[in-house]
Length: 211
Image (cartoon, rainbow, N blue to C red; front, side, top):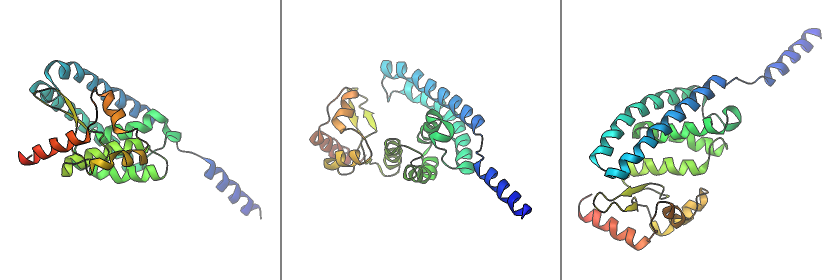
């Protein structure tokens, strides 16, 4: 009887213990700071020469090297612990998992996309962030996105535009399901108006040009 009581006591104590993720949280916050700093350094270059200019492209090659290192670290965390929630590591560190994966190369994004989809189902990640990741994967793998989160810039006119969409007429329905505002609200933040007809014409022109 005493043995049983001792066993139950130990079991209850063990069940109540939580893993200390402090070191993981701190490392993710450091990665987040470096990730954002690199991208802030890009804006002056892009504004001066254009987002698709040779100067901007050269800068992004350097960023990609650092991104690959971050992706390896975050990938190791995800493989070992799964998608850690904001409750476990804090909101900023939790979102850093998404930030790093969406800045990785296509194979890495494809590998960890199911992790994030599951995390959203378990309320460990935000559906808004998932929309950005799914759009990046879609755009890089088959040339089209679902939610319109990815914006391009014309190299000649410097005008911004929404990258190619699947079924552009229903994009706002899909955005609403993910918790995103209407596309016109989003594009205004980029300084242009969403025009579905203009978007379709641009896509038709790209198809004719063989892009």
